[in-house]
Length: 201
Image (cartoon, rainbow, N blue to C red):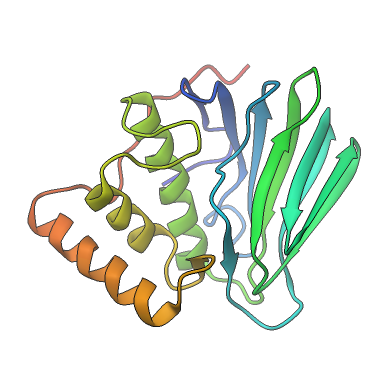
């Protein structure tokens, strides 16, 4: 489980991840992570959405330094720091990417409608595992896990039942992910892998 101050480096995207508030430290109210992203790199690229009460701002990206673009719904927005991209529930989006010549520093905040330690802990596990797999050369620059069984297990364990891939009907997506995740578990795949820590400064 993540702790505030835990810092990890992804050698594939050359990004640094720092947990600043966790499910445990916030009592399930908020998960906050700061990302340092070099030019021409991005956070996870897959379009997805978060289920919840209509119109609730479940995710925020606070642009602290640099310049970024972010796709929300069908629109692409760009901004210079300081700026906040607000992601409503049930809205397809792609996480920010660096469009500037310097490092982009962005704080990602996930705030469930009601405190929920289990949901936030799942997101922590997802980002820890994705970073670990990247460190092991098992994920690409888009944030895609190379092995589909491993990918399904990580998604099902960390992100369901709140986060879903955009463009795939739930009636197809959920049973497919859960079925592949069950197969992966049976074959001995790990749902959660801790990455190697980086220096905090």
